[in-house]
Image 1 (cartoon, rainbow, N blue to C red):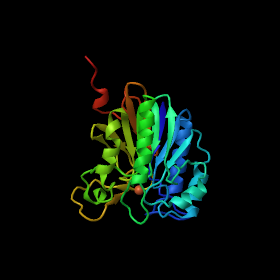
Image 2: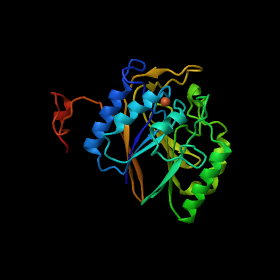
Image 3: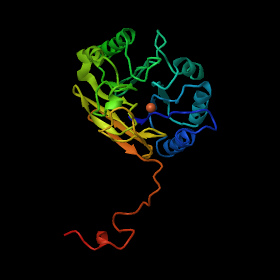
Image 4: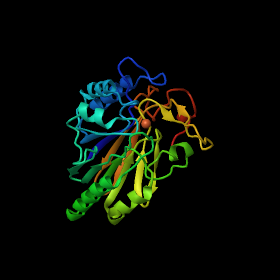
Length: 278
Ligand SMILES: [Fe+2]
């Protein structure tokens, strides 16, 4: 199974820029690259912050930009999005019975579970009792079918060591942890967004990963106390390869224009071509 993970597209209305960048042009380039190299993907998942201020015009621009995408599409919302405007623009993206942007997909490798951690009025993530009950039911169903689970969410349920980002991570993560604890052993990976940074590791034994955003990034500054330092490190998408034994994640700087060359011969006269293997 191949999944393409993108995150934090931060769309703005057409003709507007964001911190000087053009989210629409960047995502259009990503879509073209995915169609060219990964049209066989089973799913493309964008883990939230689809827009920057949640305007209907921004969601409409996102929808239009995603139209050419060949693989199936799964969207999550983030703290910058408006749930109502999202639902109006993307009526085909499934929601749970309470209206949260939550759904499941059953695959040959297990159950993909997409979570909604948005609380209007705050950039921090929240996962209320209603949503926890829904998640518990999905995990129980996966257990009954003896299926593996892959979680997708916007806010990380753990601290990253970057103080300004940690303040807006998922709040009261102990409640979330308690919900998944009975089934943690079958959760093979947790994919998230929000931090605009590449990060991999594990949380309570569950492998986790995120990656750079589409428009702007958060600079790695462990000294920052209050403000998040932005940067323009290049955007990336992740190519996730899943089989019964492994979850392999490649991050791809799809806008990289550096020279590509054979490792058998250096593009310049240097030490690379002066040594031979024994
Ligand atoms: Fe974001």
